[in-house]
Image (cartoon, rainbow, N blue to C red; front, top):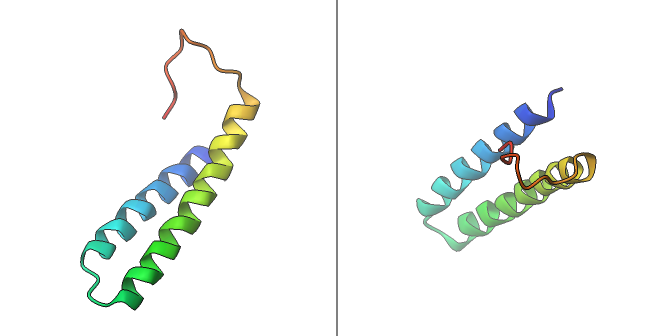
Length: 65
């Protein structure tokens, strides 16, 4: 699997879950959505750390995402 596609997919899921969180009525729904966002953000962080470890940062080049 392509890591870039995975990161894009996770980002879309985070966005969708945040939008669902806006419409949540009960505290239980909000808690479930917030835990989901937390887990997705941690997953995205794994990929971002992997990318930063693989490629040294160069000030002249734009960040690829």
